[in-house]
Length: 205
Ligand SMILES: C[S@@+](CC[C@H](N)C(=O)[O-])C[C@H]1O[C@@H](n2cnc3c(N)ncnc32)[C@H](O)[C@@H]1O
Image: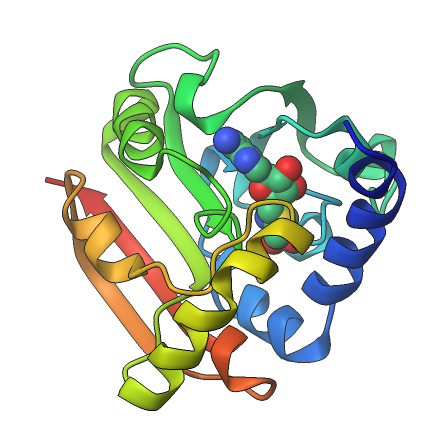
């Protein structure tokens, strides 16, 4: 691991993810999580204060980066639901089949290298009637913005710890065993190549 990846990247990612437009997006979806919840790629835990304490029974969070988790924003001992953090990849979730009511992914599908494998794992651990709650940035609808997303992506990915600007989040979710229960898509305030957002709830097919 490089010095940049260990010391600088976690600060850069945490700073970018906690900008007000992104925080407002999180608020639209995180309160939908209920029951036994799995959050994938929790990063610095920016969603933790937003969960509805009355609806969440237990939250398991996974992330392969201890450096990101070390930046965590709140003391997890003070949460009013049970919580564990597990160092793990979405492509190989160390949890039982059919065990979660909700799986939450925010601003992480952009970075997860094998999204097909990750969503196969999400389907495996989700209960049949469970829900995938997501909020992501990705491929913009306008050709001019798409062009910039594609041009900048190699450099962005290097500096952003593997984050891609141009993933088609809707297609990725729908092609990997989920159907949309509700989906919203729109630019949020910010730099256009990184601000086309997709958010909503999908259910296993
Ligand atoms: C841009 S950050 C977003 C963090 C957090 N979800 C948020 O909304 O603030 C992307 C996160 O995905 C994590 N990540 C990268 N590869 C992953 C993988 N294969 N499986 C699960 N998480 C991964 C990174 O370590 C990082 O914490």
